[in-house]
Image 1 (cartoon, one colour):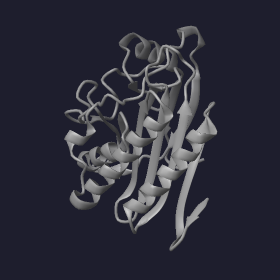
Image 2 (cartoon, rainbow, N blue to C red):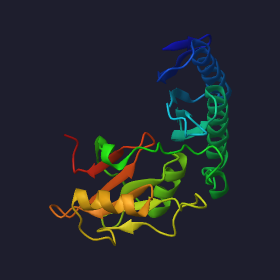
Image 3 (cartoon, rainbow, N blue to C red):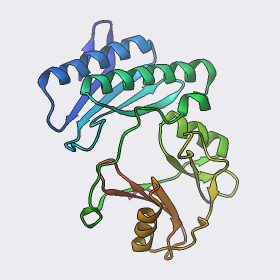
Image 4 (cartoon, helix red, strand yellow):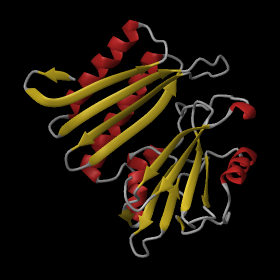
Length: 245
C-alpha cells in the first residue's frame, strides 16, 4: 500500500506478472499514483496489473488492467494491451481516467467510448490440445434491468456480463458485439438459444465459432454457464450460484 501526503486513505497497488524490468514496474507505480491523484476526492482504491506475455507472434504482448473504486460511481475497469509495458500503462490509465470522468459527469461512458480499439488484448495462440479451464468462478448474479446491466458491462470493460433479470429473476446475459464493441441488441435470458450443453460440447462450440465466449444452459440444473477464452489461450468458466460457498 502506498500513502500520499494529504490522502492517507488512498489505496494504490501495482501487481507485476511475468518478466518486466524494474524500471517498468516503477513507471507503472508512478503513473498509477498520478492517475489516482488526478481522479480527485472519492477515489477509494486504484489497482493496476501489468503482464508481459512471452509469445513472439503477438504484436501487443504487454497487457495492463486497471481498476478503480469511485464513491458515488462504483467500480470502473479497463484492460488494454500494447507493444511495450509503458505504452500499455499509459493507454490503460488514460482510458480509465476518461471513463471515470464520463461516469461522474454523465452517469454513462456512452457507446462511442466502448468500441474495439487498436489496443484490445490479443489471444495467445495456444494449441487446442494444451488448452484447459484455468479458472472456475462462482458468482451470485445481481438483479438488474437490461439497461443497468449494460451500463455495468461498459464500466467494467467486459465482453459479457451475467446478471439476474430484475423482473423474472432468471439468468440473463448482455454482451458486446464482436465488430463494433457496442452492447448487443438485447440480453439472452434464461436458457441460451444453444440449448442445454455439457462442458465438452460447449468447449467444442467455442473452438468452432472462434468467439470470445459461449453461454449455454447446464443440463443438470438448467442454469446458465459461460465458458470464455482467456488471453493466455486457456478457458475460464463462470457458474451462477444462489449463495456464495
